[in-house]
Image 1 (cartoon, helix red, strand yellow):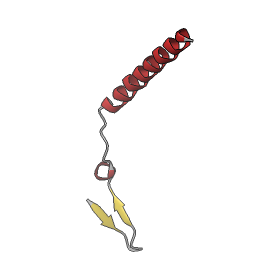
Image 2 (tube, helix red, strand yellow):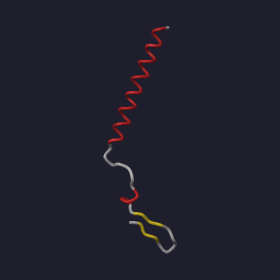
Image 3 (cartoon, rainbow, N blue to C red):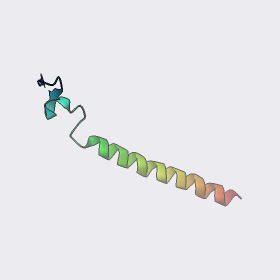
Length: 52
């Protein structure tokens, strides 16, 4: 829950303020996506170099 102090500032607990996932699943998705992009772009680059 959030609390307001005497100066009017709002204080929110860490667990309430945190909106993201903490499982680490996003990190793996980003890693696999980066690897896939590198592989696909490398294939495009190599096949383009062979055709010239």
